[in-house]
Amino acid sequence: MLKKTTAIGIALALLAACSQNPKPVPAPVPQPQQPPPPQPAEAPARPAVPGLVPLPALVEPGSGDGFTVASDTVIMLGSQRTALQVPAARQLAEMIRRATGTTPRIITSPPEPLPQRSFIALSLLGKEAPVDLGLGPEGYDLIVRSEGALLRAETPAGLFYGVQTLRQLLPYWSEYEAVLFRQPRTVTLPPLHIRDVPRYEWRGAMLDVARHFFTVDEVKQFVDLLALHKMNRLHLHLADDQGWRIEIKKWPDLTVQGGTTEVGGTPGGFYTHAQYADLVAYAADRFITIVPEIDMPGHTNAMLSSIAELNCTGRSTPRFTGTDVGFSALCVDLEFTYKFLDDVIGEIAAMTPGRYFHMGGDEVKTLKPEQYRAFVERVQAIVRKHGKQMIGWGEVAAVSLEPSSIVQHWHPDAPTADLARAPQLILSPANRTYLDMKYDRETALGLNWAGLIPLRTSYDWDPAAQVPGARVLGVEAPLWSETIAAMRDVEFLAMPRLAAIAEVAWSPQDARTWDTFRVRLGAQAPRWSALGINFYRAPEIPWAR
Ligand code: TNX
Image (cartoon, rainbow, N blue to C red; front, side):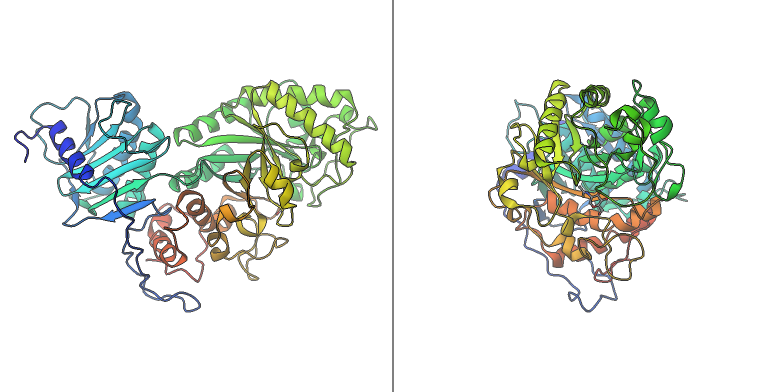
């Protein structure tokens, strides 16, 4: 069909092949090749749809042999907004190096005719694009045929998510930092067409760095888990009764005192401005927004023990390294409290490029409802003054909220009428999404106040059905750290439930089923092992070897 083998020509041919079928029908749901629980599978099944988690909105398996990535494969950048395609191209090049032993060249303005036959083309579609694929701010479209692969998106985020999908299509050994190949290898991507757009804009996880402190490098590892699953928000619980974790230049005592404690009496820690900036940048490179939380007016013993003037008595409280909740509260009738919070929120807002500030607001047992209400309303105004949207835990739904404010639903028994009135809702129902709940009675780590949460409970629910009438922004999985102090504990409780929540937040409800999820998830095991992840081998999953 092509007269000249030019880069543009090949890309156009792929484009044409795709637009012949502009409205593909959803791929038939693959049947699991293993029986569902209670019989755990012995031999791992080969997924009919490739082992992708989260499941793309649309997967059409193609015919033929797929595309073989070889030592002469090049990555070809589209001519629109070329510089913005470079990070995705570099990540892809590195993945291919690890898969094949050869780093593909990245070519921007291909010589014509193209010397190489073998290519992966990236393209950032502009407004002038010939077809509107409806990919939005985070979607991507991926075509793999024997001639090559074409990944298109409207934004760098979309390209990034497309590259994460390519990552899961490459063999697991491409996750190893270094593999020595005696000879360069080839790897083959399956022939397919994926058009993928996330269901929800908020796909998050929370890490409680207050009960136990986690270093920047550890939090980066957690960010990597999120990125692998196309999640885009990392909520950091930066202050609680047991510790204060972020340097505030105007109030150094917060970290001098509050930064040195954690559950169990071990030393704790905190992030300097520079470390926080480093973390924010690392997350941003993976299209993840950091959402800082300073919990208030309750869960504030670390503040109250560091700064005497925050107490109604004028005396600082003793440090606290236990796990009780609900006993502490700021002195909400004191003007000083709001001056202090203005300083703290201002400083955190200034070092946070994301749009959000989380003010906690949960489990306040020592204030009258009207005191609580007045406090939250004042804090809301301070947060707005510093240019951020306020988020609060479910309890703030009882307060008069601005349209931009966001409620994070957590308690399974919260009054749904309040939640339905909330301007916007993040869903973190504890009995589905709490990563710190035990899997079963045998799980040594974790709590069980919201019940045991086996994998299927994390997976099998519809966010749209949680709070009828609510405006749902998305889903977030919190990991509280009363019982966990090391990264291997974080990984054990988070994985695989984080992957389940990622799919709940990303994939269309009617495209995903537990039976195909089991098989696709099981296919991740060698990859996760290669990445050194200490995941829980949930017995109901046919883990591949
Ligand atoms: C409830 S969830 C809390 C946290 C605990 C968690 C333990 C929420 C807003 N408050 O303070 O760490 O349960 O699962």
